[in-house]
Amino acid sequence: MVYGRCCTQQIVKILLKWLVRPRTTASTLYVVAVVCVLGTMLMSLSQIFHVHTTTSPPAHHWSIHFLSDTGIHGTNYTNTTERNETKFIWTHPEIDLLHKKPFQLLKKYKNPCWHEPLYTTNVYQNNKYSLLSPNVRSTIIRLMTEWSTRLTRDQIPQRLRCLPYFFIIGQPKCGSTDLFRRIIQHPDVVSPPIKELHWWSRNRMGKRLNYTDIIPLSDYIDMFDQTAVQIERRGDDAKHQIVTGEASVSVMWENDDWWHLPENIGQDEPLYTNADYMKHFLPDLKVIIILRNPSERLFSDYLYFNPTANKSLEDFHNRVNFSVQLYENCFDNHSIRHCLYNYTIGMASQVRLRIGVYSVYLKDWLKLYPREQFLVLTLNEYSGKMLKTMKKVFKFLKLRPLSKEQSVAMKKLKRQNKRKFKDKKLGAMMNKTKEMLETFYGQFDRELSEILGYEFSWESTEEHNNSYIKNAPVIDDNDYL
Image (cartoon, rainbow, N blue to C red; front, top):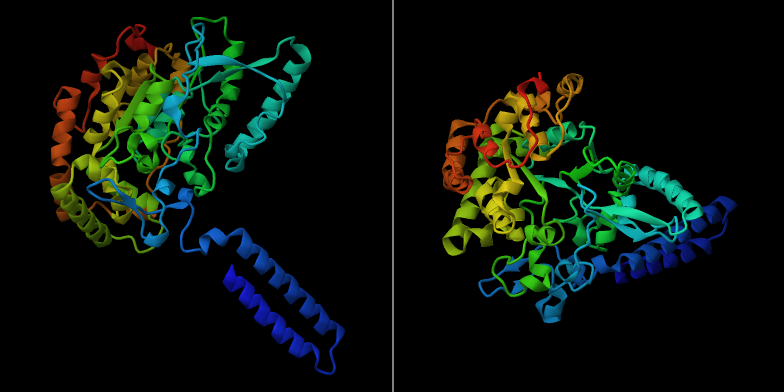
């Protein structure tokens, strides 16, 4: 801000000297006026964004943190003499989920839903998701028409509110987008306007808004209002009720803001993760996880999220080598959970190595949810036997089987997020890179087998998953092609 003011003052001095010259024309005065306007705008902008030019940003703007053995947090962006320890803890009541009362769900619906009074059509006035997605904005317009009708028609206007019945929690670059797209082809499944809301892992703390504001739980629930309308309309059909879900694949592993939360204060690693908050509101959630050979997942992740033109096998190897050493050094001095949930190390890593340590994250989820509420798939299984896998998914979700025509239509859907041609030209990763990654991930793959209770293979998990799907409707082999 000081810089902007000084700069503007210098501009004014120069302009005054210029104006006192003889032969000052109208065009010259016009240029001066434009420059003065720009100078005023510069001062205004410096005032608006002054938080970015100060030496110590506010509590909701810490970007990189360091976590010591004692659990004291710091930042490399702040003058330590100005640091106030209370700035590191976020106490906004909307973030404090564990002290919110769970919703009283209506038993008549398969999907977790409840009623709320309706007082106005403009219930979405402050919804933050409406700033992020045109699909949300168009959905809101349709819903406001529905609410207007109810306010005029009903003696006691109300709206049905819902949360997801199922959730694909992981992992990125493992086929989740394609899987979710095929799930919502089922006539009894409706999608929210955004497939990946990332609310539980990122956006409730305001990450998508650059931590300038939080996104409250009510904004997240708003995203399922259109689904709730359809659930309500089919409410008397107890046999084929509509459900909804989402596929934010950051939820399984990303807990980067855990150290800001009061319930985790002073801890070297999180006591509470995304699983705890979801369990509080969704104890009966159906959890779907689709995984992939972690080495191949990482290579796909590198190709997809690295937009630079200098992608190469050698560059990937160098990044992997650096990241593996980074995490192994951390493992030598800290617990594995400490290292994987440490945001600083995650950002310092040149590839997203931590996402492939599936067993550590899965253990946190299984502490809270019973095994029968999980369906674990692999990309190889899904890609090789798509219809058979989808049959298993619908059975797990307790949905009716598709007809032959519906199965054919689902099979014809174009694959999502296929590798681009220019990335295919690179070929497979180098053998030395593959060996390094297999060594790093090997212990975690073995641990995954122990957790799941069988010798886990990246080729298939279908035979073992079937034993965990209980009380599902019987589906004949002829239900699918």
